[in-house]
Image (cartoon, rainbow, N blue to C red; front, side):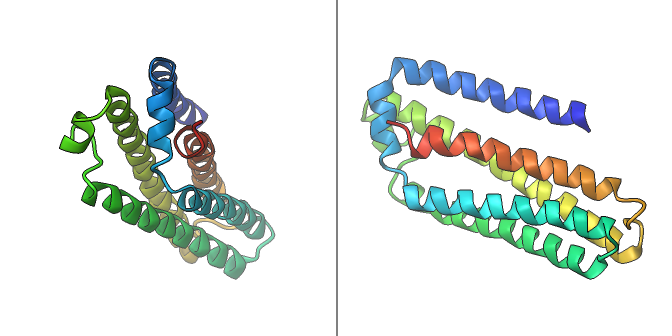
Length: 185
């Protein structure tokens, strides 16, 4: 599991290096584009993911203590947090797309090249992150089913532990994504 998580870090790390290289080339365009993103929405999504990380960790503690119902409730809440995050991201993307702000759109092609690059990276990185949220929700759902069937319990909880590690990584990646796009100066 740790090797897999490391490969995910390498993937996003490469994208962050690419962002840094283009930011160095187009700092004013990146700052201008970043101001088009809604910081309140980005902050809300950050809080949602941080809360979900807490509830995933708490569910592992609950299952280790034999509190099956509590663990189920906490995992369910975490999955709902992931769904809320994705729903907010869907509406955020939809707003930008309706405004014609997406990679290689007429609006961006008529502007400075740094704006098009910023939004290209924004859609690739947040889209890839969204895919990872879906994968994390799937792993948490499998863990939920395993708890219900008794395959995950106070003695055998590695599935939930690994799903939790993956979920924490997804949250950690967002902690880097959020300032790069929403707080860029």
